[in-house]
Amino acid sequence: MAAASIIAVTVMLVYQLYTNSSLPRQKFGLGFFLGRTWDPVGGDFGALPFIYGTMVSSALALLVAVPLGVGAAIFLSELAPPRISSALTFVIELLAAVPSVIYGLLGIFVLVPVLRQGVMPFLKTTLGFLPLFKGPIYGVSMLAGGLVLAIMIVPFIISVSREVLMAVPVEQREAALGLGATKWESTWQVVVPFARVGIFASVFLALARALGETMAVTMVIGNDPKISASLFAPGYSIAAVIANEFTEATGDLYLQALIELGLVLFLLTILINGLARLVIIATAQKGAVQG
Amino acid sequence: MSIRTRWRKLVNVVMLSLTGVCALATVSVLFFILGYLLWYGGKSLNWAFFTQLPTPVGEPGGGMANAIVGSGKLLLLASLVGIPIGLLGGIYLAEFGGRAFSFFVRYTTDLLNGVPSIVMGIFAYTIIVLPMKHFSAFAGGLALGVMMIPIAVRTTEESLRAVPVMLREGALALGTSKWRTVATVVMPAAMRGIVTGVMLTLARVAGETAPLLFTAFSNRFWSSGWDQPIASLPVMIYTYAIAPYDDWHRQAWAAGLVLLALVLIANVGARLVISRGISFRRA
Image 1 (tube, rainbow over the protein chains, first blue to last red):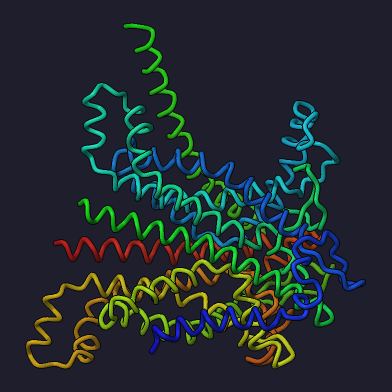
Image 2: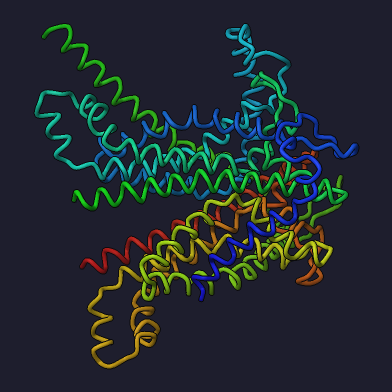
Protein backbone atom coordinates (compact mmCIF):
# COMPACT_ATOMS: atom_id res chain seq x y z
CA MET A 1 0.00 0.00 0.00
CA ALA A 2 2.57 2.51 1.16
CA ALA A 3 4.87 1.46 -1.64
CA ALA A 4 2.09 1.97 -4.15
CA SER A 5 1.37 5.37 -2.64
CA ILE A 6 4.93 6.45 -3.44
CA ILE A 7 4.27 5.73 -7.08
CA ALA A 8 0.89 7.41 -6.78
CA VAL A 9 2.50 10.57 -5.38
CA THR A 10 4.97 10.66 -8.26
CA VAL A 11 2.24 10.19 -10.84
CA MET A 12 0.12 12.85 -9.16
CA LEU A 13 3.07 15.22 -9.22
CA VAL A 14 3.45 14.88 -12.98
CA TYR A 15 -0.30 15.14 -13.51
CA GLN A 16 -0.65 18.31 -11.42
CA LEU A 17 2.25 20.02 -13.13
CA TYR A 18 0.93 19.04 -16.54
CA THR A 19 -2.71 20.06 -16.12
CA ASN A 20 -1.83 23.30 -14.39
CA SER A 21 0.32 24.47 -17.26
CA SER A 22 -2.08 23.97 -20.16
CA LEU A 23 -2.69 27.66 -20.92
CA PRO A 24 0.84 28.62 -22.00
CA ARG A 25 1.16 25.34 -23.90
CA GLN A 26 -1.90 26.20 -25.96
CA LYS A 27 -0.87 29.78 -26.48
CA PHE A 28 2.82 29.47 -27.19
CA GLY A 29 3.38 25.80 -28.04
CA LEU A 30 7.02 25.02 -28.62
CA GLY A 31 7.69 28.71 -29.11
CA PHE A 32 7.69 28.95 -25.33
CA PHE A 33 11.18 27.50 -25.31
CA LEU A 34 12.52 29.79 -28.00
CA GLY A 35 10.97 33.10 -26.96
CA ARG A 36 13.49 35.59 -25.63
CA THR A 37 11.12 38.07 -24.02
CA TRP A 38 9.66 37.60 -20.57
CA ASP A 39 7.03 40.29 -20.23
CA PRO A 40 4.45 39.54 -17.51
CA VAL A 41 2.65 42.84 -18.12
CA GLY A 42 2.26 42.31 -21.86
CA GLY A 43 1.48 38.63 -21.37
CA ASP A 44 4.38 37.45 -23.51
CA PHE A 45 6.36 34.57 -22.03
CA GLY A 46 9.50 33.06 -23.52
CA ALA A 47 11.67 30.74 -21.49
CA LEU A 48 14.91 30.91 -23.41
CA PRO A 49 16.79 33.29 -21.05
CA PHE A 50 16.04 31.03 -18.09
CA ILE A 51 16.94 27.84 -19.90
CA TYR A 52 20.15 29.52 -21.04
CA GLY A 53 20.92 30.69 -17.50
CA THR A 54 20.31 27.27 -16.00
CA MET A 55 22.48 25.59 -18.62
CA VAL A 56 25.36 28.05 -18.40
CA SER A 57 25.48 28.20 -14.61
CA SER A 58 25.33 24.41 -14.36
CA ALA A 59 28.00 23.96 -17.04
CA LEU A 60 30.22 26.43 -15.22
CA ALA A 61 29.64 24.56 -11.99
CA LEU A 62 30.61 21.24 -13.59
CA LEU A 63 33.71 22.81 -15.13
CA VAL A 64 34.95 23.72 -11.66
CA ALA A 65 33.49 20.87 -9.65
CA VAL A 66 34.42 17.84 -11.76
CA PRO A 67 38.23 18.23 -11.62
CA LEU A 68 38.06 19.24 -7.98
CA GLY A 69 35.70 16.44 -7.02
CA VAL A 70 37.42 13.67 -8.96
CA GLY A 71 40.81 14.83 -7.69
CA ALA A 72 39.62 14.78 -4.11
CA ALA A 73 37.98 11.38 -4.62
CA ILE A 74 41.28 9.99 -5.96
CA PHE A 75 43.07 11.34 -2.92
CA LEU A 76 40.53 9.86 -0.52
CA SER A 77 40.42 6.41 -2.13
CA GLU A 78 44.00 5.92 -3.30
CA LEU A 79 46.35 7.97 -1.18
CA ALA A 80 45.02 8.94 2.20
CA PRO A 81 45.47 6.51 5.09
CA PRO A 82 42.10 4.95 6.06
CA ARG A 83 41.76 7.02 9.22
CA ILE A 84 42.29 10.38 7.52
CA SER A 85 40.18 9.27 4.58
CA SER A 86 37.17 8.40 6.72
CA ALA A 87 37.52 11.60 8.77
CA LEU A 88 37.61 13.73 5.62
CA THR A 89 34.71 11.80 4.12
CA PHE A 90 32.72 12.55 7.25
CA VAL A 91 33.39 16.28 6.84
CA ILE A 92 32.41 16.10 3.17
CA GLU A 93 29.14 14.40 4.06
CA LEU A 94 28.41 17.21 6.52
CA LEU A 95 29.14 19.66 3.72
CA ALA A 96 26.43 17.98 1.67
CA ALA A 97 24.02 18.52 4.57
CA VAL A 98 24.48 22.30 4.79
CA PRO A 99 21.18 23.94 3.73
CA SER A 100 21.35 25.74 0.41
CA VAL A 101 20.11 29.02 1.89
CA ILE A 102 23.29 29.08 3.98
CA TYR A 103 25.39 28.74 0.85
CA GLY A 104 23.39 31.62 -0.54
CA LEU A 105 24.01 33.71 2.57
CA LEU A 106 27.76 33.24 2.27
CA GLY A 107 27.47 33.76 -1.47
CA ILE A 108 25.91 37.20 -1.05
CA PHE A 109 28.07 38.48 1.76
CA VAL A 110 31.42 36.79 1.08
CA LEU A 111 31.76 35.42 -2.46
CA VAL A 112 30.10 38.29 -4.34
CA PRO A 113 32.22 41.05 -2.71
CA VAL A 114 35.39 39.04 -3.32
CA LEU A 115 34.43 38.60 -6.97
CA ARG A 116 33.50 42.25 -7.40
CA GLN A 117 36.58 43.71 -5.78
CA GLY A 118 39.27 41.16 -6.52
CA VAL A 119 38.65 38.42 -9.04
CA MET A 120 36.55 40.20 -11.66
CA PRO A 121 38.74 43.32 -12.11
CA PHE A 122 41.75 41.01 -12.37
CA LEU A 123 40.13 38.83 -15.02
CA LYS A 124 38.99 41.91 -16.89
CA THR A 125 42.46 43.42 -17.13
CA THR A 126 44.19 40.16 -18.04
CA LEU A 127 41.60 38.33 -20.15
CA GLY A 128 39.30 41.24 -20.99
CA PHE A 129 39.73 40.70 -24.72
CA LEU A 130 37.55 37.58 -24.47
CA PRO A 131 33.80 38.18 -24.72
CA LEU A 132 33.44 36.01 -21.60
CA PHE A 133 34.96 38.65 -19.37
CA LYS A 134 33.53 41.86 -20.80
CA GLY A 135 31.04 44.36 -19.52
CA PRO A 136 30.39 46.21 -16.29
CA ILE A 137 31.09 44.49 -12.98
CA TYR A 138 28.21 44.06 -10.56
CA GLY A 139 29.41 41.12 -8.54
CA VAL A 140 26.09 39.28 -8.75
CA SER A 141 26.52 37.39 -12.00
CA MET A 142 26.47 34.15 -13.90
CA LEU A 143 30.00 33.56 -12.61
CA ALA A 144 28.92 33.88 -8.98
CA GLY A 145 25.98 31.53 -9.60
CA GLY A 146 28.22 28.94 -11.24
CA LEU A 147 30.80 29.10 -8.46
CA VAL A 148 28.28 28.71 -5.64
CA LEU A 149 26.76 25.76 -7.49
CA ALA A 150 30.21 24.23 -7.95
CA ILE A 151 30.88 24.37 -4.22
CA MET A 152 27.50 22.82 -3.53
CA ILE A 153 27.81 19.85 -5.91
CA VAL A 154 31.42 18.89 -5.18
CA PRO A 155 30.43 16.76 -2.14
CA PHE A 156 28.06 14.67 -4.30
CA ILE A 157 30.73 14.03 -6.93
CA ILE A 158 33.26 13.11 -4.26
CA SER A 159 31.13 10.70 -2.28
CA VAL A 160 29.90 8.70 -5.28
CA SER A 161 33.25 8.74 -7.14
CA ARG A 162 35.10 7.67 -4.02
CA GLU A 163 32.86 4.66 -3.61
CA VAL A 164 33.28 3.65 -7.23
CA LEU A 165 37.05 4.04 -7.04
CA MET A 166 37.22 1.99 -3.88
CA ALA A 167 35.25 -0.79 -5.59
CA VAL A 168 38.02 -1.24 -8.19
CA PRO A 169 39.72 -4.58 -7.43
CA VAL A 170 43.11 -4.31 -5.74
CA GLU A 171 44.59 -6.69 -8.34
CA GLN A 172 44.21 -4.02 -11.00
CA ARG A 173 46.46 -1.67 -9.03
CA GLU A 174 48.91 -4.39 -8.10
CA ALA A 175 49.25 -5.49 -11.73
CA ALA A 176 49.97 -1.94 -12.90
CA LEU A 177 52.45 -1.29 -10.10
CA GLY A 178 54.07 -4.66 -10.74
CA LEU A 179 54.71 -3.63 -14.35
CA GLY A 180 56.68 -0.67 -13.07
CA ALA A 181 54.05 2.06 -13.28
CA THR A 182 54.27 4.89 -10.78
CA LYS A 183 51.44 5.34 -8.32
CA TRP A 184 49.96 8.12 -10.45
CA GLU A 185 50.23 6.14 -13.67
CA SER A 186 48.48 3.18 -12.10
CA THR A 187 45.75 5.44 -10.76
CA TRP A 188 45.20 7.50 -13.89
CA GLN A 189 45.68 4.84 -16.56
CA VAL A 190 44.20 1.82 -14.80
CA VAL A 191 42.01 2.62 -11.80
CA VAL A 192 40.21 5.70 -13.13
CA PRO A 193 39.37 4.16 -16.54
CA PHE A 194 38.09 1.08 -14.71
CA ALA A 195 35.76 3.27 -12.67
CA ARG A 196 34.89 5.76 -15.39
CA VAL A 197 31.27 4.73 -15.86
CA GLY A 198 30.57 5.25 -12.17
CA ILE A 199 32.37 8.58 -12.20
CA PHE A 200 30.24 9.71 -15.16
CA ALA A 201 27.16 8.70 -13.22
CA SER A 202 28.27 10.77 -10.24
CA VAL A 203 28.74 13.76 -12.52
CA PHE A 204 25.23 13.31 -13.90
CA LEU A 205 23.75 13.11 -10.41
CA ALA A 206 25.58 16.31 -9.54
CA LEU A 207 24.33 17.94 -12.73
CA ALA A 208 20.74 17.11 -11.82
CA ARG A 209 21.32 18.75 -8.43
CA ALA A 210 22.81 21.83 -10.03
CA LEU A 211 19.92 22.25 -12.47
CA GLY A 212 17.30 22.18 -9.72
CA GLU A 213 19.19 24.14 -7.10
CA THR A 214 17.20 27.21 -6.22
CA MET A 215 18.03 29.33 -3.23
CA ALA A 216 21.78 29.79 -3.47
CA VAL A 217 21.54 30.58 -7.18
CA THR A 218 18.64 32.98 -6.75
CA MET A 219 20.63 34.92 -4.19
CA VAL A 220 23.75 35.49 -6.31
CA ILE A 221 22.91 35.17 -10.01
CA GLY A 222 21.48 38.68 -10.38
CA ASN A 223 17.98 37.79 -11.60
CA ASP A 224 17.95 39.55 -14.95
CA PRO A 225 16.28 37.70 -17.84
CA LYS A 226 18.81 38.61 -20.53
CA ILE A 227 21.06 36.42 -22.60
CA SER A 228 24.59 37.69 -22.47
CA ALA A 229 27.85 36.10 -23.48
CA SER A 230 29.69 37.67 -20.57
CA LEU A 231 29.99 35.73 -17.36
CA PHE A 232 30.07 39.05 -15.50
CA ALA A 233 26.54 39.90 -16.56
CA PRO A 234 23.63 39.01 -14.28
CA GLY A 235 21.55 36.09 -15.48
CA TYR A 236 18.51 34.15 -14.38
CA SER A 237 17.76 30.46 -13.97
CA ILE A 238 14.55 28.45 -14.20
CA ALA A 239 14.47 27.67 -10.50
CA ALA A 240 15.29 31.26 -9.58
CA VAL A 241 12.48 32.77 -11.63
CA ILE A 242 9.98 30.38 -10.06
CA ALA A 243 11.21 31.28 -6.57
CA ASN A 244 11.09 35.00 -7.23
CA GLU A 245 7.92 35.48 -9.20
CA PHE A 246 5.60 32.69 -8.11
CA THR A 247 4.04 34.55 -5.20
CA GLU A 248 3.48 37.70 -7.19
CA ALA A 249 2.29 36.07 -10.38
CA THR A 250 -0.98 37.72 -11.28
CA GLY A 251 -3.23 36.11 -13.82
CA ASP A 252 -3.54 32.49 -14.81
CA LEU A 253 -1.29 32.70 -17.83
CA TYR A 254 1.61 34.11 -15.82
CA LEU A 255 1.22 31.53 -13.07
CA GLN A 256 0.87 28.68 -15.52
CA ALA A 257 3.90 29.82 -17.47
CA LEU A 258 5.88 29.49 -14.24
CA ILE A 259 4.37 26.06 -13.58
CA GLU A 260 5.35 25.01 -17.09
CA LEU A 261 8.90 26.09 -16.29
CA GLY A 262 8.67 23.86 -13.21
CA LEU A 263 7.53 20.99 -15.43
CA VAL A 264 10.50 21.54 -17.74
CA LEU A 265 12.86 21.52 -14.77
CA PHE A 266 11.20 18.39 -13.41
CA LEU A 267 11.46 16.47 -16.68
CA LEU A 268 15.06 17.56 -17.20
CA THR A 269 16.21 16.41 -13.77
CA ILE A 270 14.19 13.18 -13.95
CA LEU A 271 15.77 12.35 -17.29
CA ILE A 272 19.31 12.98 -16.08
CA ASN A 273 18.73 11.28 -12.73
CA GLY A 274 17.05 8.30 -14.34
CA LEU A 275 19.97 7.77 -16.71
CA ALA A 276 22.53 8.09 -13.93
CA ARG A 277 20.64 5.65 -11.68
CA LEU A 278 20.35 3.10 -14.47
CA VAL A 279 24.08 3.36 -15.10
CA ILE A 280 24.81 2.90 -11.40
CA ILE A 281 22.50 -0.11 -11.15
CA ALA A 282 24.00 -1.65 -14.28
CA THR A 283 27.59 -1.24 -13.09
CA ALA A 284 26.73 -2.48 -9.59
CA GLN A 285 25.28 -5.67 -11.08
CA LYS A 286 28.29 -6.13 -13.30
CA GLY A 287 30.55 -5.71 -10.29
CA ALA A 288 28.53 -8.24 -8.33
CA VAL A 289 28.87 -10.81 -11.11
CA GLN A 290 32.62 -10.27 -11.31
CA GLY A 291 33.04 -10.38 -7.57
CA MET B 1 68.25 7.76 -13.71
CA SER B 2 67.15 8.62 -17.23
CA ILE B 3 65.33 11.84 -17.96
CA ARG B 4 62.17 9.94 -18.71
CA THR B 5 62.17 8.20 -15.34
CA ARG B 6 62.78 11.47 -13.60
CA TRP B 7 59.94 13.06 -15.55
CA ARG B 8 57.59 10.24 -14.60
CA LYS B 9 58.50 10.58 -10.94
CA LEU B 10 57.97 14.32 -11.11
CA VAL B 11 54.55 13.90 -12.72
CA ASN B 12 53.72 11.32 -10.06
CA VAL B 13 54.54 13.63 -7.17
CA VAL B 14 52.92 16.72 -8.71
CA MET B 15 49.66 15.02 -9.65
CA LEU B 16 49.32 13.16 -6.36
CA SER B 17 49.85 16.35 -4.40
CA LEU B 18 47.29 18.08 -6.59
CA THR B 19 44.66 15.52 -5.59
CA GLY B 20 45.55 16.25 -1.97
CA VAL B 21 45.06 19.95 -2.61
CA CYS B 22 41.62 19.21 -4.11
CA ALA B 23 40.59 17.27 -1.02
CA LEU B 24 41.94 19.93 1.30
CA ALA B 25 40.18 22.72 -0.61
CA THR B 26 36.83 20.95 -0.41
CA VAL B 27 37.12 20.16 3.26
CA SER B 28 38.23 23.68 4.12
CA VAL B 29 34.96 25.01 2.66
CA LEU B 30 33.09 23.59 5.64
CA PHE B 31 35.44 25.32 8.04
CA PHE B 32 35.08 28.58 6.11
CA ILE B 33 31.30 28.33 6.40
CA LEU B 34 31.46 27.49 10.09
CA GLY B 35 33.99 30.21 10.77
CA TYR B 36 32.03 32.96 9.01
CA LEU B 37 28.75 31.95 10.63
CA LEU B 38 30.30 31.75 14.09
CA TRP B 39 31.99 35.12 13.64
CA TYR B 40 29.11 37.11 12.14
CA GLY B 41 26.24 35.08 13.59
CA GLY B 42 27.78 34.84 17.04
CA LYS B 43 28.14 38.62 17.19
CA SER B 44 24.46 39.24 16.62
CA LEU B 45 23.03 36.28 18.47
CA ASN B 46 21.41 37.17 21.77
CA TRP B 47 18.60 36.09 24.00
CA ALA B 48 16.06 38.33 22.29
CA PHE B 49 16.64 36.43 19.05
CA PHE B 50 15.00 33.36 20.58
CA THR B 51 12.22 35.09 22.50
CA GLN B 52 11.00 38.12 20.55
CA LEU B 53 9.05 38.75 17.37
CA PRO B 54 10.62 40.55 14.41
CA THR B 55 10.49 44.32 14.75
CA PRO B 56 9.23 46.63 11.99
CA VAL B 57 11.79 47.90 9.46
CA GLY B 58 14.13 50.52 10.89
CA GLU B 59 13.60 49.52 14.47
CA PRO B 60 16.63 47.62 15.75
CA GLY B 61 16.44 44.54 17.95
CA GLY B 62 13.77 41.90 17.91
CA GLY B 63 14.14 38.23 17.20
CA MET B 64 12.78 35.32 15.28
CA ALA B 65 10.88 33.40 17.94
CA ASN B 66 7.94 32.94 15.59
CA ALA B 67 10.16 31.52 12.86
CA ILE B 68 11.76 29.01 15.22
CA VAL B 69 8.37 27.80 16.43
CA GLY B 70 7.10 27.91 12.83
CA SER B 71 9.91 25.67 11.60
CA GLY B 72 9.06 23.25 14.39
CA LYS B 73 5.38 23.18 13.43
CA LEU B 74 6.20 22.68 9.76
CA LEU B 75 8.51 19.79 10.62
CA LEU B 76 5.75 18.23 12.71
CA LEU B 77 3.31 18.43 9.80
CA ALA B 78 5.95 17.10 7.43
CA SER B 79 6.61 14.16 9.75
CA LEU B 80 2.91 13.29 9.77
CA VAL B 81 3.01 12.99 6.00
CA GLY B 82 6.50 11.67 5.41
CA ILE B 83 7.23 9.24 8.23
CA PRO B 84 4.23 6.85 7.96
CA ILE B 85 4.57 6.49 4.19
CA GLY B 86 8.35 6.33 4.43
CA LEU B 87 8.35 3.68 7.17
CA LEU B 88 5.70 1.48 5.60
CA GLY B 89 7.30 1.82 2.19
CA GLY B 90 10.66 0.82 3.62
CA ILE B 91 9.15 -2.16 5.45
CA TYR B 92 7.43 -3.28 2.29
CA LEU B 93 10.62 -3.07 0.23
CA ALA B 94 12.74 -4.88 2.80
CA GLU B 95 10.30 -7.58 3.93
CA PHE B 96 7.42 -8.16 1.56
CA GLY B 97 8.16 -6.89 -1.92
CA GLY B 98 8.26 -8.99 -5.06
CA ARG B 99 11.28 -8.48 -7.29
CA ALA B 100 9.95 -6.56 -10.26
CA PHE B 101 7.55 -4.35 -8.33
CA SER B 102 10.19 -3.62 -5.68
CA PHE B 103 12.66 -2.59 -8.32
CA PHE B 104 10.09 -0.24 -9.81
CA VAL B 105 9.21 1.27 -6.43
CA ARG B 106 12.87 1.70 -5.53
CA TYR B 107 13.60 3.35 -8.85
CA THR B 108 10.65 5.72 -8.44
CA THR B 109 11.82 6.55 -4.93
CA ASP B 110 15.25 7.46 -6.24
CA LEU B 111 13.69 9.65 -8.89
CA LEU B 112 11.49 11.32 -6.31
CA ASN B 113 14.64 12.00 -4.31
CA GLY B 114 16.10 13.82 -7.29
CA VAL B 115 13.12 16.10 -7.88
CA PRO B 116 14.18 19.71 -7.30
CA SER B 117 12.74 21.04 -4.07
CA ILE B 118 11.14 23.99 -5.80
CA VAL B 119 9.10 21.62 -7.95
CA MET B 120 7.80 20.03 -4.74
CA GLY B 121 6.72 23.52 -3.76
CA ILE B 122 4.74 23.92 -6.98
CA PHE B 123 3.15 20.52 -6.38
CA ALA B 124 1.96 21.48 -2.89
CA TYR B 125 0.84 24.82 -4.27
CA THR B 126 -1.40 23.27 -6.93
CA ILE B 127 -2.88 20.75 -4.48
CA ILE B 128 -3.50 22.91 -1.40
CA VAL B 129 -2.92 26.60 -2.03
CA LEU B 130 -4.92 26.85 -5.27
CA PRO B 131 -8.12 25.26 -3.87
CA MET B 132 -7.81 27.08 -0.53
CA LYS B 133 -6.89 30.36 -2.21
CA HIS B 134 -4.31 31.32 0.41
CA PHE B 135 -0.94 30.19 1.75
CA SER B 136 -0.95 27.85 4.72
CA ALA B 137 1.18 25.82 7.07
CA PHE B 138 -0.52 22.69 5.69
CA ALA B 139 0.83 23.32 2.21
CA GLY B 140 4.35 23.86 3.56
CA GLY B 141 4.11 20.71 5.65
CA LEU B 142 2.92 18.71 2.65
CA ALA B 143 5.78 19.95 0.47
CA LEU B 144 8.36 19.04 3.11
CA GLY B 145 6.59 15.77 3.89
CA VAL B 146 6.73 14.57 0.29
CA MET B 147 10.43 15.44 0.27
CA MET B 148 10.94 13.27 3.35
CA ILE B 149 9.41 10.14 1.81
CA PRO B 150 12.28 8.96 -0.40
CA ILE B 151 14.99 9.39 2.24
CA ALA B 152 12.85 7.77 4.95
CA VAL B 153 12.10 4.80 2.67
CA ARG B 154 15.72 4.13 1.85
CA THR B 155 17.06 4.46 5.42
CA THR B 156 14.26 2.24 6.80
CA GLU B 157 14.88 -0.37 4.15
CA GLU B 158 18.61 -0.39 4.80
CA SER B 159 18.32 -0.71 8.55
CA LEU B 160 15.77 -3.53 8.23
CA ARG B 161 18.06 -5.38 5.83
CA ALA B 162 20.88 -5.15 8.37
CA VAL B 163 18.85 -7.29 10.82
CA PRO B 164 20.16 -10.90 10.67
CA VAL B 165 17.92 -13.42 8.88
CA MET B 166 18.20 -15.80 11.86
CA LEU B 167 16.02 -13.50 13.95
CA ARG B 168 13.23 -13.73 11.37
CA GLU B 169 13.63 -17.46 10.95
CA GLY B 170 13.52 -17.95 14.71
CA ALA B 171 10.30 -16.02 15.07
CA LEU B 172 8.68 -17.70 12.07
CA ALA B 173 9.69 -21.13 13.37
CA LEU B 174 7.82 -20.39 16.57
CA GLY B 175 4.69 -20.05 14.47
CA THR B 176 4.42 -16.25 14.40
CA SER B 177 2.79 -14.71 11.39
CA LYS B 178 4.93 -12.76 8.96
CA TRP B 179 3.46 -9.42 9.94
CA ARG B 180 3.89 -10.05 13.68
CA THR B 181 7.47 -11.13 13.11
CA VAL B 182 8.22 -7.87 11.38
CA ALA B 183 6.36 -5.75 13.93
CA THR B 184 7.59 -7.38 17.13
CA VAL B 185 11.01 -8.82 16.24
CA VAL B 186 12.57 -7.16 13.21
CA MET B 187 11.40 -3.60 13.83
CA PRO B 188 12.69 -3.38 17.43
CA ALA B 189 16.04 -4.79 16.31
CA ALA B 190 16.29 -2.13 13.60
CA MET B 191 14.86 0.68 15.72
CA ARG B 192 18.14 2.48 16.24
CA GLY B 193 18.84 2.68 12.54
CA ILE B 194 15.31 3.78 11.75
CA VAL B 195 15.32 6.55 14.34
CA THR B 196 18.63 7.94 13.14
CA GLY B 197 17.33 7.76 9.59
CA VAL B 198 14.31 9.83 10.56
CA MET B 199 16.59 12.33 12.29
CA LEU B 200 18.71 12.70 9.16
CA THR B 201 15.58 13.16 7.08
CA LEU B 202 14.29 15.88 9.39
CA ALA B 203 17.66 17.63 9.32
CA ARG B 204 17.56 17.61 5.55
CA VAL B 205 14.12 19.17 5.15
CA ALA B 206 14.60 21.57 8.08
CA GLY B 207 16.92 23.63 5.90
CA GLU B 208 14.70 23.66 2.82
CA THR B 209 13.66 27.10 1.68
CA ALA B 210 12.49 26.88 -1.88
CA PRO B 211 9.35 24.76 -1.35
CA LEU B 212 8.19 27.02 1.49
CA LEU B 213 8.35 30.32 -0.39
CA PHE B 214 4.95 29.90 -1.96
CA THR B 215 3.35 27.30 0.27
CA ALA B 216 3.87 28.28 3.91
CA PHE B 217 4.92 31.75 2.71
CA SER B 218 6.04 33.75 5.74
CA ASN B 219 4.61 35.70 8.60
CA ARG B 220 6.01 38.47 10.74
CA PHE B 221 3.78 37.54 13.68
CA TRP B 222 2.75 34.40 15.49
CA SER B 223 0.82 32.18 13.12
CA SER B 224 -2.87 32.26 13.92
CA GLY B 225 -3.67 28.73 12.79
CA TRP B 226 -2.59 25.71 10.79
CA ASP B 227 -4.39 26.99 7.72
CA GLN B 228 -2.63 30.35 7.85
CA PRO B 229 0.77 31.48 6.51
CA ILE B 230 3.59 30.65 8.88
CA ALA B 231 7.18 31.84 9.28
CA SER B 232 10.16 29.50 9.12
CA LEU B 233 13.87 29.96 9.73
CA PRO B 234 15.15 29.27 6.20
CA VAL B 235 12.65 31.62 4.56
CA MET B 236 13.51 34.30 7.14
CA ILE B 237 17.20 33.93 6.33
CA TYR B 238 16.43 34.37 2.66
CA THR B 239 14.21 37.44 3.00
CA TYR B 240 16.54 39.06 5.53
CA ALA B 241 19.67 38.37 3.48
CA ILE B 242 18.35 39.94 0.27
CA ALA B 243 16.85 42.95 2.10
CA PRO B 244 18.84 46.19 2.04
CA TYR B 245 19.01 46.75 5.82
CA ASP B 246 22.17 46.12 7.83
CA ASP B 247 20.22 45.19 10.92
CA TRP B 248 18.37 42.51 8.96
CA HIS B 249 21.66 41.16 7.62
CA ARG B 250 22.89 40.70 11.18
CA GLN B 251 19.73 38.79 12.03
CA ALA B 252 20.15 36.66 8.90
CA TRP B 253 23.62 35.66 10.06
CA ALA B 254 22.30 34.81 13.51
CA ALA B 255 19.47 32.73 12.03
CA GLY B 256 21.96 31.04 9.70
CA LEU B 257 24.10 30.08 12.67
CA VAL B 258 21.13 28.64 14.56
CA LEU B 259 19.90 26.68 11.53
CA LEU B 260 23.33 25.32 10.64
CA ALA B 261 24.00 24.36 14.26
CA LEU B 262 20.72 22.41 14.44
CA VAL B 263 21.32 20.64 11.12
CA LEU B 264 24.93 19.74 11.86
CA ILE B 265 24.19 18.54 15.40
CA ALA B 266 21.42 16.29 14.07
CA ASN B 267 23.76 14.96 11.39
CA VAL B 268 26.76 14.35 13.61
CA GLY B 269 24.56 12.80 16.30
CA ALA B 270 22.84 10.48 13.84
CA ARG B 271 26.10 9.38 12.26
CA LEU B 272 27.74 8.70 15.61
CA VAL B 273 24.80 6.52 16.61
CA ILE B 274 24.96 4.67 13.29
CA SER B 275 28.69 3.97 13.50
CA ARG B 276 28.40 2.85 17.11
CA GLY B 277 25.50 0.59 16.18
CA ILE B 278 27.57 -1.12 13.52
CA SER B 279 30.58 -1.72 15.76
CA PHE B 280 28.23 -3.08 18.42
CA ARG B 281 26.75 -5.50 15.94
CA ARG B 282 30.13 -6.69 14.75
CA ALA B 283 31.30 -7.29 18.28
